[in-house]
Length: 516
Image 1 (cartoon, rainbow, N blue to C red):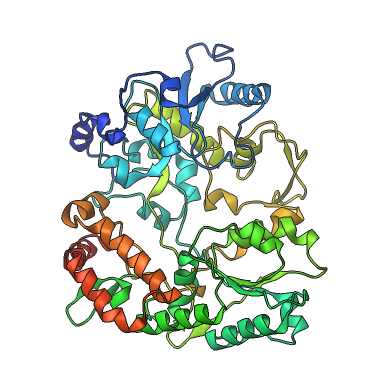
Image 2: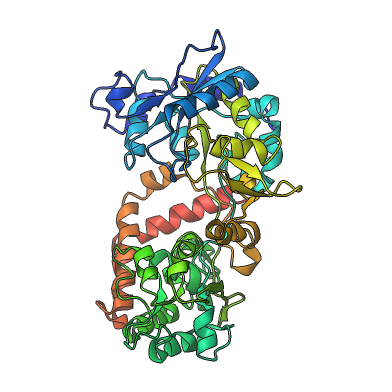
């Protein structure tokens, strides 16, 4: 692993943190309360002495099951455990739900202490708000380094070899097609293997009243924009939902210009017109409430819309109700699914951190003796193993006293090391352990290993946000019939007028500079 380039680090250290506020601080230099965050430390003097303190901005999602946070004495018990074991005093800053990003920027631009948070490293490194971690990981993060494969580190590393964060994920399969297997059985249907067979299943669901309510109100497919593109586009586009390299001029271009895209668009518009795709798919809707109606035949949304939500309502559905993945689905251009590329999201250490070594030591402890230490960080003492292999676990009480304020090791490197022996959690755990990293079941984006420089993109493609918005809005219009497919060429001309050529030039330049 490369050593840090000290001159570059020195230059980074003199950059202003104020840039992180994006002009929204309105008056930096206040205390934690002024940033709208709740500092949680328990009795900060108890047994602390001269030990290092680390300030954790808890925006990882660890508190999703208990967003209000821990019972104070339970949090204090966990804090004391870390003080005793590591000689480090962790102090959690819990931002108000829904305003995590805004409050983080306020903290980064103020005099308040914040040492570690979750974010996209390329966004914060470009503003001088975080530090590279190469030397810190080599000296204090050996268990972290071992836990993640090289491809995860690739997404955390810039072109000069500097590692800016601890990974959160890997290229994954997030949008499978789930099908009600009890409905297949009821209508004497086989699990589909092709997109034509999938269409036939949806037609049968629509016409056969498999939910048995006597109404023609079955929803053949629950989806949204991301689910539609990533679960289905590969049937007609060779590269799937991905930028592609046009052999005619050797330039990177958006998928709208790829061969087969118009065929995909026509098929989705046809499905929507026939009522196979949920009519509110591109508006705001609640997947859980929709599943509760017992009318959803298939889903191509983000996997957890089924793995987390369906088990909650399954006891209230007819006996035998179940969903399974339609594996190996193919179309004229091959596999339907497109894998999600890795990303730059990770645990980042701020330039303000007074004890960066303690931060890495603290996180490294959670990667040691997996999964015991990461489970302690997530659930405190409210869990136990159910097998000698230390894999299956259970919560000792549904009443969560400790919420997970100190949990900094979320991600596939830890989440696939255990599973709940719990019917409500098992479906999700099974997906994480057996399906999510099975990228061979999907098409990998052409530029999956390229970490594009977002700041350069914004600078060199001034209309980038307008282009992205236009692409999404017009796709929905074509699918829903608001805009006829006969206007597709006019749409491409719209993209050209909005700056598509600048988009192509910049993406092409970065692709050849950065591809690994």
